[in-house]
Length: 624
Image (tube, rainbow, N blue to C red):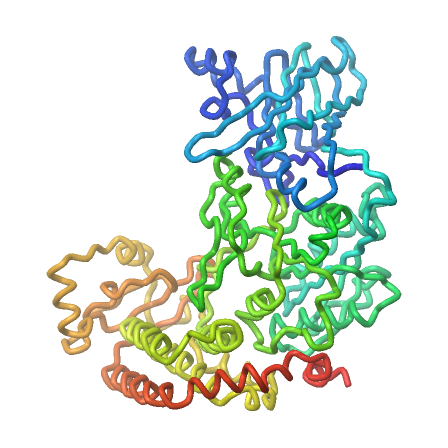
């Protein structure tokens, strides 16, 4: 049985070579090897590079005599401790298809404090000296050291060797494997290009590929919230598209879950929720399925989460599991560069986690009971609440990931409303100690900041989110979700083409704002004058939409908030009248929070349970 495929870089998915394999010179700092050390000392690294070449068209790795390649990487290392903990996997071997004579070295790699320990487990010589045809070989890992991460290296002993294919394999009888079919749920709103690309990847790799072990065990459900997909063209016997009301991410994902429950003839056992605007590695889905087929009885209710890697810098990890902390979100293992061996090994450590975002999250369909549906909170916090409610075990493993545009490149003003409202809803259920004192402090800090940035509409959206929460769950259940969202969207700032704004864009001015420095004297003056609110203003500034500093706005009259990703912007202007209005509204809400917060929280914990029922969702989605 193939447990984990050896992967290579591929255009259109990921081309970061060191996520897949390392040439000898890339490993010099990690592995004490006589040949590598000699090359480094002799300054012959450029020459050594010629010993290894990757043929992208054929997907083959060519190694000339003396060349060496390591596979202690994010996609091709093997998380042996996690496989042994969660699954029935016992023996493991490495299967290779090569030509030429190759020395194979099997390792166990482990990070202990600041040290990386690499232990040689076994060595094999496979292939023939002058053979040009492909040969297969199996190299067994010994069972006496199952710590950290398994990996291997290949060294060419003949003039030219080629690696055509490879996988970690094991002999596991069919009767011991669980029968698993995954239903992949995708929610989309007018992102036809992303959806069609991902459907094509899934068709080619799994859905229409009889050679794939997962063939016949994947069904795809797409909730088309924008009602713009060409259903007749895209829908097949294993791709199911449902035009849906635009009730946000949770509305679309819940529609997918309901359809998986209803379509019993498809025999879906597990739900896999994925964002529509991701780049996927289909082997991540196959690996998820393989884990599920081999789960121990103690972990049959486990969730499997996928890490988020940056789309613009594909080796940088944004999050691998997260902790809520009553609203202070802690993204675990954030910022790791997974090109490094240390980064991969850090991922092997299991930490306390509370949820995994729905950019990639897999769990048993049995979780989706009639009384255990998600909350109808549109966007931001839907995956969080469902995870806090249901996750007992979360499996996270190197190689299970998606690439996603980083959130700092996706600014939307209207999210001010949803973030605070949904945070309060989530805390009402899962963090009852979050009280008026914490909320008032958070509100005053946030609103003061937005006033300094001249983003008065954001203050209104934030305050409206709190006020709507205080109305309780009965108010939320009565709302038309689409109409409410339209009102919220209309209340925020709109990103506009910069040549349509009444303020000119200059990149040098933008760069100057990024590099502006603060001083103690200037900081004291800004505090005493409310960041210049009490002083005359003149001049303009161009700032990023995220990572703002109050000093950027000191005594400026106008500000262009520029989004480097979309190259669009919006303009805000200093207004003493608007600033004092927002301050007054914030102080007024302070008193209401003291009187009404506890009652609203209690109402959500009691009456809010109705929103988690299948009956509610069928009505909310217009299915009955």
